[in-house]
Image (tube, rainbow, N blue to C red; front, side, top):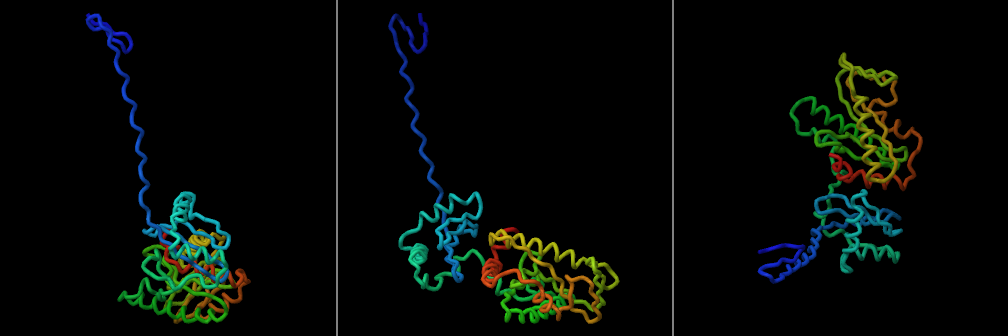
Length: 298
């Protein structure tokens, strides 16, 4: 006869007590995945920062070397930024950079040792018309020629404290022909070349070749997007003004301030009210020339 009560059993008159199960072994904590960080020291006048990215180019944040504030790129990268800063070896160039900034040394770092660690390319090397250069179609060739003419005019602004970029990528298939950064602010410029008369009304409606053209609406959208991208990257509230530059073999009649003949670009931009102090121009230019300011949104 066999009976059961709780954990005890009676088998043939003898009492047998079941042994309690052995306690489960504590779970082995999972090791954190190995993360490779890329450190990019950056200095502009009195601004000193150590930018940190993942090896795939993802932005983590930066360390302000003047205040030693750690500024994550987003709410989700705060822990990564702390790991990156904690993981600096005393022998790394980045650690020397921080020490130099704290001690006020003038020479912070030797020349950057490896260009290939940079997760971005310098848009200052872009040519006018780069996105459409190489096409055999006559309209594309005219477009490239027009952008080159505009670039030649804009070069005159550099003598008065402006910085110029060309072929700034808003997406893999679309760019801003010219981005001007200077005392009167940010300007996104779209160049149009035509063999027809151009008429622009005060409300921005543009007519050429007998059709209503969407040139103004297009550059307004692009300028808005450019301002948003630059605001995020620079952590500043930035607005970009739209401008259409026209090169026409015929007449151009414009009652809209955002559409001008190419030769009038310098006067239009210089004649606007000042917006930036000189030191801001270089800061914004330093952000705008980085490809990852734009490709992060593609």
